[in-house]
Length: 227
Ligand code: GAR
Image (cartoon, rainbow, N blue to C red; front, side):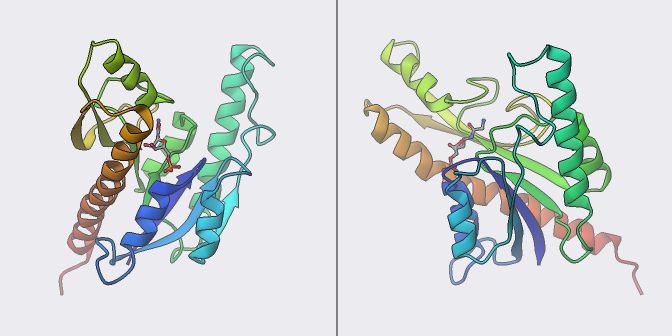
């Protein structure tokens, strides 16, 4: 199976969608194994989901893990702290024994923007990294994307937003899209609209992961010496 590591900061409903998809009978990701979960918030409900599915998890606190909060230090100290955190996390992931080392990292509601200190060693090791974001490319980057789109609906400036899965680069919610889906606003109130977005994103994260997994499995086959 293809080995996947998931990173989540909160509720973990996208993580759950991935877990469910690895299970028979319907699972689109039956050829995958979620080797572990990384969380950066102690209160993340994603932890309970990992426990229920017997998936090992690790908690790496941003603050104290080398990370410095904005406002507590100058910009350079913040950037240094981020880099230390990112480098340590990449090293931890890549130190896993061969059979446990992930081939794909999926950011499922991971509220931390990785710097090249994380991305470079991960990419050099041939590990792919993707993210799900509840907005269309180049719109509503960052946190609370659904709420910000909703404000635009209410102001009469927009009638649709969307969801995308994309490869991760060192800019928040940017990078080559894998799947993009528009979601129309049909006059719902915020809670109902959020719910609709989540239903769509749970499908989209599974589809995008399955697409990247197919590529990984194909490249594995083509790397094997023919005999
Ligand atoms: C999801 O809506 C995800 O798309 C979003 O965080 C939420 C996490 O929900 N991600 C971002 O905003 C990334 N910038 P979950 O914890 O229930 O999966």
